[in-house]
Amino acid sequence: MILRPLIIVVLLLGILSPVSLSLRFELRSGHTKCISEDIKSNSMTVGKYHLVNPNQDHPLPDSHKLAVKVTSPQGNSYHTAEKVETGQFAFTAAEDGGYMACFWADDRSPEITMTVDFDWRTGVQAKDWSNVAKKGQVEGMELELKKLYDMATSIHDEMFYLRAREEAMQELNQATTSKMFWLSFLSLFLCLSVAGLQFWHLKTFFEKKKLI
Image (cartoon, rainbow, N blue to C red; front, side):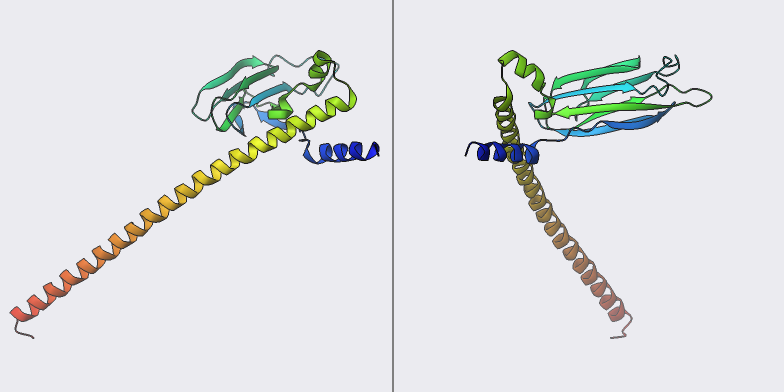
């Protein structure tokens, strides 16, 4: 009987637990690559990045440096770094929308290509669970239950956030539909008015010429 709730919790964790993927991409000198992440306000977000060294036996050349800038939807800067091989950032989002992380490298001749490893986590994924377990002396099942609770809370908040965005989109669609209706009505009225004026002008012209 005790194993049954344990199995249920493990299954729920498997279904609800977010997967953290490390994004790896190539960056050529003189070029810029930007990555966008949709983050809601008051959400914690952390990011780590570093240049991948293809030859672990030797350090990266001095030419292998990159610059990074993280900005909010309104253009506010949350992180800036220049001529670095590795770095990280962490902040609490102050506004909803797409946050942008841009990476670029100085132009060089001949052109060089670097590989960047970037890990960006938001919400529950951004929490350091190992640190939580140490501070709270939480072990085993209790830690898993705490994870599950935080995930459920995050999903609950995300549902309300998506519902609010859906309502905003519906209001925008209704407003756009109303404007299009009146614009179509105005266009039809102008077309009929122009047709009426043309008909009146032609009728007057033919009457003067005594053709009708």
